[in-house]
Length: 341
Image 1 (spheres, helix red, strand yellow):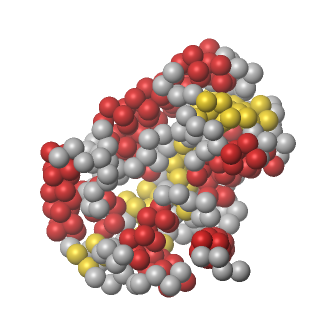
Image 2 (cartoon, one colour):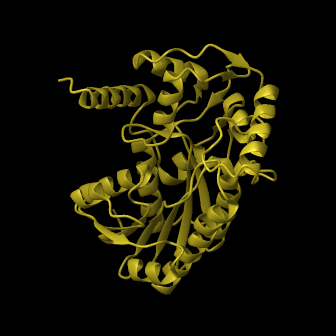
């Protein structure tokens, strides 16, 4: 690493954040994690947990003191919830991170973004970072991540170099979102193939996502050719989404998904459920939304040539290797749960 041994990770207790902390600590770097809770898994790694909210500027100023690198991973994710919550965390919180970095002479900020910032309801096949931001995002998460990423990249300057990493559908052992939700819905047989089932999507194994973040930080502290730029991150090749899901399910002895629904019906059901949940102020996420219907039926995979050329990025773990690691991890969890040795 070309930067100092003191780093701040916001959201370090989450899936990506914790994996990032683990990699940093493995290199002997002193890591602080800012979050609203104490994270035993972080403390076991020898990192320091600092309690606080990124919406509090004083807290951030204290957290970044003495650091020259910040990985801003914290965000409100998901596709359902109150806009004010998404905006205060994802946008205002990010503005606070930027302000604290500027006040405390932080040299480099790597921001965890998402390809959802360019998803506009159309197939995206091999597009690069020149693709414009979505003009009609269908969820608050995408809307606020667009605004936050724009602020991060706009803040890039000689004193504070910034870059954004856009990993797509992050998965692997330790995942608390994508894979557990897929498994749950697969076991309850509530999943439906939306459309013809041939749509291709990018997926990003967790170790590769962490690798991209570290490469970006290293670049910002050296050549800075990544400064002010976003980078798509995915596996070497996209997967046919429903084939990949069913192959994973077969390995995990989860029923295959075979029932289908048209994109139009799925989108209509999503709109209806959004209206009902909105009127009744139901906080839990609907099983279908317009955004989800489009994500499940359309192709969305991206060129990673810029990441390869500028960051020197390449997969550390192939898709096949990642599936082996994931299946082994999931089966170990099942064995532990049911006391099987």
